[in-house]
Amino acid sequence: MKNFVNSATRLRATHLLLLLTLTITLYSPPCPLTEAASSSTQELLPGFKARPDPSTASFQPLLHDPTGALSLGFLRTNRTLLSLAVLHLPSSEPLWVSDPTRFSRWSDKTELSFTNGSLVISDPGSRVVWSTPNSLGGDRVVLLNSSDLQIQKKENDGGFSVVWQSFDFPGSTLVEGQNFTDAMALVSGNGLYSMRLGKDFMGLYAAFKTGSEQIYWKHTAMEAKADIIEGKGPIYARVNPDGYLGMYQNGTGPPVDVQPFTNFQRPVNGLLIVRLEPDGNLKGYYWDGSKWVFNYQAISDTCELPSPCGSYGLCNSGSGCSCLDNRTEYASAGCLPAESGSGDFCGDVVAEDDFWALRRKGVELPFKELIRHETASSLEECEDTCEKNCSCWGAVYSNSSGFCYTVDFPIQTLLSVGDETKVGYFKVRKGARKGRVGVLLRAMIGVLIGVVLVFVGFIGFVVYKAWMRRRGVKGFFDDDQTGGVSPGPYKDLGSASFRSLEMCNR
Ligand SMILES: *[C@@H]1O[C@H](CO)[C@@H](O)[C@H](O)[C@H]1NC(C)=O
Ligand SMILES: *[C@@H]1O[C@H](CO)[C@@H](O)[C@H](O)[C@H]1NC(C)=O
Ligand SMILES: *[C@@H]1O[C@H](CO)[C@@H](O)[C@H](O)[C@H]1NC(C)=O
Ligand SMILES: *[C@@H]1O[C@H](CO)[C@@H](O)[C@H](O)[C@H]1NC(C)=O
Ligand SMILES: *[C@@H]1O[C@H](CO)[C@@H](O)[C@H](O)[C@H]1NC(C)=O
Ligand SMILES: *[C@@H]1O[C@H](CO)[C@@H](O)[C@H](O)[C@H]1NC(C)=O
Ligand SMILES: *[C@@H]1O[C@H](CO)[C@@H](O)[C@H](O)[C@H]1NC(C)=O
Ligand SMILES: *[C@@H]1O[C@H](CO)[C@@H](O)[C@H](O)[C@H]1NC(C)=O
View 1 (cartoon, rainbow, N blue to C red):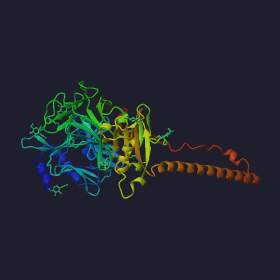
View 2: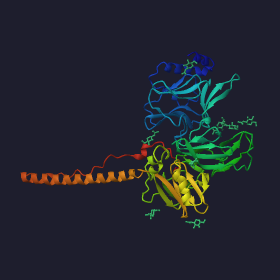
View 3: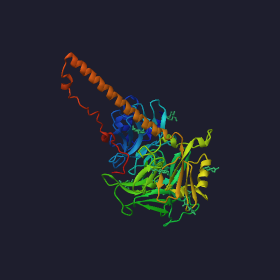
């Protein structure tokens, strides 16, 4: 409380009234503090507290930017989950979330507070769920028109300095003007893919296997306008209002690399963003006032995405997905059950007993230039290398080049190519086909039970009718034919998702 009073004395008189209201509400904790959520709130001051309102359907704003188009607030996901997010209000698109990997509960006991100069989310048990570092000494929280959420400290000269900003902790989205450094990572909403910077490149990585990552896209700086100079510091990336994703080296010189958007050098009025999508592609959009317009993608060929057809899938440019195992029909759930594609074959059990080998001609690895390979004199030698290595999931041999590519992560989607001399060898966990057989079996049992039930019903009906007729009750069933097939519960699937996370189809 001492800290609270100290900072209060430093505040301007105009803030005193707001502070008083806050202090009053501070002493009546059980009710949701919605007073602070007025649409004009442009700064949060020490002592601020807010709780989610049970009647909120999707978003409860707490703080607005000067334009009113952006807001910090509680975002409600799946009815029961809460995250603190900066939302682009016209599109309901979150540009930043406090903790992309963890949610809090949407409970009227969950609380956001600005105490001791830090933002803190505590759960119903008063446990801290998320917070900014706790000795920031911030005096106010503001949301800039760039979507940057800042905790600022008042300086002796009357100005404010930034002690923490959300721009330093991106989630899946990079906003125009935000500096993306080599210490940061952009992570897709599903947590599978990430973007990071290397010494002279930008890379996209997939976590196909826990504890290791496979790079699947690499863009090396072109250094057309400026060279990367050794010792001048690391590179960073930024979405430039002139319509490109630039890479720069320490300082504000010309970019060392330019990845142009479709609106390159034709500045647009609306906000530009770049986002790592759940399919592993890096895509750019701009807000045209009514919708997000797609203007950039790192990977233009769908088959070059990290896993467009799922595990053990086969991608054919033009004709879509099928399965590596030609006896399996492709379904959206993938070609093999998920448990067949995790971990590796190293363990106590003899490796040969754990898997069977699936071979397919005319296949190639996507992003093969980024995959480990060595030369082998024959297909047999290539397969043998993989078969004997328990951390190898498969190998693809190219007879023409003699390259043997080995895959050290669970098999994802392969590319279908015309060249039949490119042969793939893939390990499949034993029992992995069981899931499919199980589904078929269950379906067959279901049908059988249905047939039996209908038959029993029919016999019962005949017997009953004969019995009724014998008792002289006629036409009982003939008159009661109105109750037909009931339409069943109707679900409006469209309205269930008020806030679509997929922007690609807009
Ligand atoms: C939200 O619900 C959907 C469908 O029930 C589910 O697929 C998704 O994983 C849930 N999201 C979270 C974050 O729990
Ligand atoms: C704020 O700081 C004071 C003293 O530094 C400490 O006693 C108090 O528990 C802190 N409050 C929170 C919410 O962390
Ligand atoms: C955002 O704010 C800056 C100053 O803080 C201003 O120069 C700029 O024009 C504003 N942009 C918009 C879109 O309002
Ligand atoms: C990004 O970096 C440039 C160059 O270092 C700097 O001038 C600019 O203020 C930074 N922008 C933000 C939002 O931090
Ligand atoms: C950026 O460059 C300046 C001088 O050119 C240097 O003082 C500073 O340490 C560099 N920053 C980083 C992060 O390397
Ligand atoms: C499936 O693949 C095997 C081995 O490559 C081949 O012998 C067989 O003819 C193929 N079956 C069909 C239906 O394409
Ligand atoms: C593989 O390449 C060798 C020579 O490089 C050739 O003799 C052989 O016929 C090729 N095998 C196939 C199956 O194409
Ligand atoms: C087995 O494969 C892994 C990854 O592909 C590799 O790092 C390792 O060196 C291989 N081991 C042998 C004995 O070849």
